[in-house]
Image 1 (tube, rainbow, N blue to C red):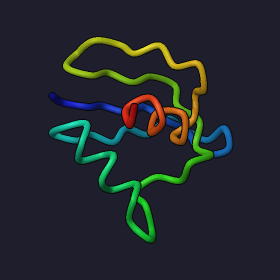
Image 2: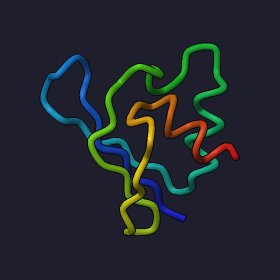
Image 3: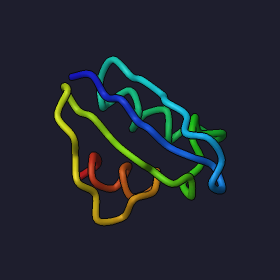
Length: 68
């Protein structure tokens, strides 16, 4: 279940982070220093190639969506 996150930090240029599985992202966010900060703005998320529509378009919102 490939997860591809497109995000920007304070309006900067878009960056992309990829995970082999959505659970890898969730686990990384539990670390003391998470891979991505909760307040980063998500511009697009693809889960197995399909775009996810988030109500809360932040890394924190994506975490909550996947952690249901």
